[in-house]
Image (cartoon, rainbow, N blue to C red; front, side):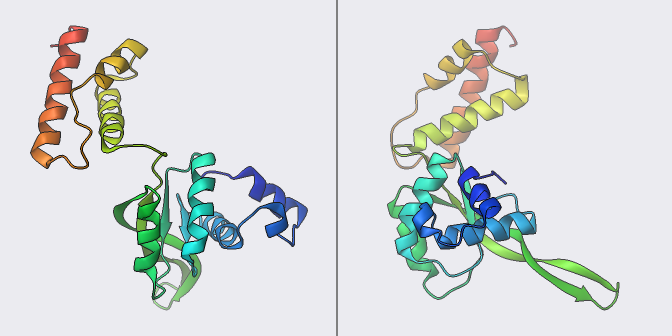
Length: 191
C-alpha cells in the first residue's frame, strides 16, 4: 500500500487533533487499519459519510493512489458510491481484502486473518476519460508483451483512433487492441 507521508508523521508525532493537521479522521483510520492488515489498497472498513468523499478523492489524487476499497457494509453505501461517481471515480468490481480481525480456527488451532468482500473504487485523474483508461491499458498490454516502450512508440499508441465516448463495446475494445498490436508489430518490424 502507498505510504502517505503526512499520515506517517502524524503517527510518529502522536498527533491528537487530526483536523488541525488537515487530516480527515475517517481516512486516517482507514490508512492505519489498512497498513496493519497488510492490505494492498487503502480500505475503508468503517462508516463513511458523503461529506468525506471530497477529501478522500483529493488526497488520493494528490498522493497518486489509483484505487481504494470499501468493505464497510453500512446502510447508505449506495449513496456513498454515488458520491464517488459524481467526482469522476468509477466502480471497478469487488475483491476480498484482509482486515485487522483474526479468527481462531478450532481445527488447526491457529488464528487466521479474516477477509471481507470490498468494492473497488478507481480514483480517476481529474478530466480522465475512457479514452485515457483504454490507452493506459494498451500501453500496459504492449509493455507486457514486448518490454519497455520508447517515447515515440508510446506516442504512436496515443495516436490510436479512439473516440471520446463514454462507452466502447467489448468487440470494439478487442478490435482496438488487435489493431494496436498490428500497428506496433509493423512499426517495430516485429511482424
